Amino acid sequence: MGKGQSSDAKRKTIIAGNWKMNKTVSEAAALTKSIVEGLATELKGEALPEIVLCPAFLCLAEVLNQVKGSPCKVGAQNMDYRDSGAFTGEIAPPMLTAMHVQYVLIGHSERRQFFGETNESVNLKVKAALAHGLTPVMCVGELLEQREAGQADDVVREQVVAGLAGITAEQIAQDGGARIVIAYEPVWAIGTGKNCESPEANRVCGLIRAIVEELYSGTNISAGTSILYGGSVKASTIDEQMQQEHIDGALVGGASLKAEDFLPLIKGGAKRLKSFSHA
Ligand code: PGA
Image 1 (cartoon, rainbow, N blue to C red):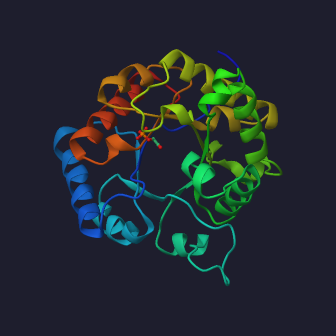
Image 2: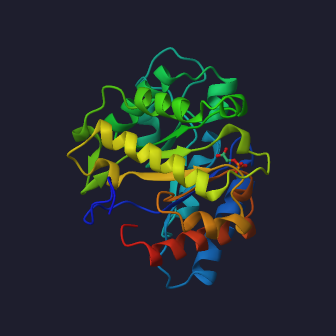
């Protein structure tokens, strides 16, 4: 058993759908309804992974309404780190918690690329999420040029270390595990159909776990942190991905927009639960 693999550590297998800037309120309601119905029929009686649906802000209320009584959880795609104030167009953490949103994506590469998100703002938002009882899904991953220049590991290390800067084990610890999720999403694999090969994705997810272990050695944090892979995950790739030691689930974009594409990914997560005792 390697570092960060203590037998008593609990970490969840998570299948999260990032709907990005897609779906109107009524379309989001319909998609949620078909996912919930699909779970009740196709996966009836099965132990399920944690399922997290991340619609646009405007659709959160409707999706929360539709998931009532189902195993699905709901996450936001972003938030501001401040509690309130004159920040036109922003959404504050207490607005999310008041609605019972449980997860929040932080630092998705599209936020970093198009909306000026930096390692520093990611760090402020991760701290704010933890302070408000939300589970942050902190996204990291290198650009194609960085991978080609052999800098992938350094970039990921810097993003993980900077994103977690100043955050104590006590702030993250929860129920013998950790209330933080890290998603490794190589930018060149997002929305491109180009999948990062599973052994390589596993290697980088393992590196992330080792970095978390360096930061929080002597605790259960690294063994309790769910580390997801994201980037063109689909039905044909999920089984192999879910067999990897360090890939605890998937953050899915394109294949989360239709129930018939997303349900097989949840099935992939359910299979992992059967084969990994820590999941
Ligand atoms: P994709 O997106 O599955 O469409 O590649 C993943 C993501 O951006 O989270």
